[in-house]
Length: 330
Ligand SMILES: Nc1ncnc2c1ncn2[C@@H]1O[C@H](COP(=O)(O)OP(=O)(O)OP(=O)(O)O)[C@@H](O)[C@H]1O
Image (cartoon, rainbow, N blue to C red; front, side, top):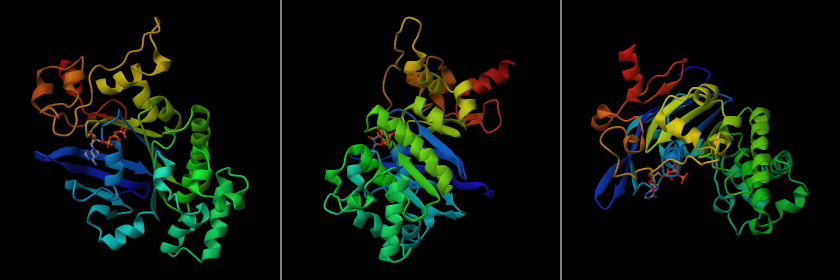
């Protein structure tokens, strides 16, 4: 693991318990995150983005999910095999989360100030007074005014946009190195979304954070991510630098996602949606998971799953047999 790498995920595989037994959900996911950079996990709803993000620190319910392989190296320790005490000290302290719904991560019965200092005290980061001072500092860093008043407020007294700022401030209380933001702006209106994205970028630089940003919105991530990892039905379809993936998408799924962006409406104004739906776990096809929706699929796509192959520029990979077919035709 190089010094510049903060998180390295290799062949992460996970199954979901269903009425018919365990079925694959994540299959052989591999990606690497650089310190101080933003990696975006992109894909339609149901592709496995949230499950992947929660799997990284084993936040998933044990009675529903089981790991079947792979490793998650964070600062050279495999989080999947850490003792639960050690893992708890990583979670919330070194790696923290911001979720889509601020209401779901904040306790409705506890004042904001108390919630913010709780994790700080649990992780023995300092005294209560120091925790309160830090909470006030972070609340003002995320652009909240009347900080003392907000510290004494309950979540229901604040708007969605303010609450998401509070969640971000709370996530920074223990000086995390990695922030996992799961669709942090999608429950908010467009103006507030833009402000929060700007804020996240500022905080990333100010606090030296690495950010795993989860989104189904290619347009949004193209502004903020250094790297993009496109997931499709539990597998990595394509991964590479943002410029490379957006300017030279190699996987048909990435191309279809990009073509369905409103900014790429056709001249007639038609909206090019992708036909069909993401297959749920238990219904993944035997070969490439995208074959049923892919206009370029051929025989081989039905029989086996393509692995990631180099797609042009360095560090740009795509899991599509078209790449090897093109190679053969050269
Ligand atoms: N607790 C659960 N019980 C049953 N199925 C689940 C559970 N959590 C996730 N799944 C299934 O796993 C698949 C991946 O879900 P996940 O939430 O990770 O997708 P996602 O890409 O994050 O989608 P979204 O953008 O809608 O959040 C989906 O088919 C989902 O229905």
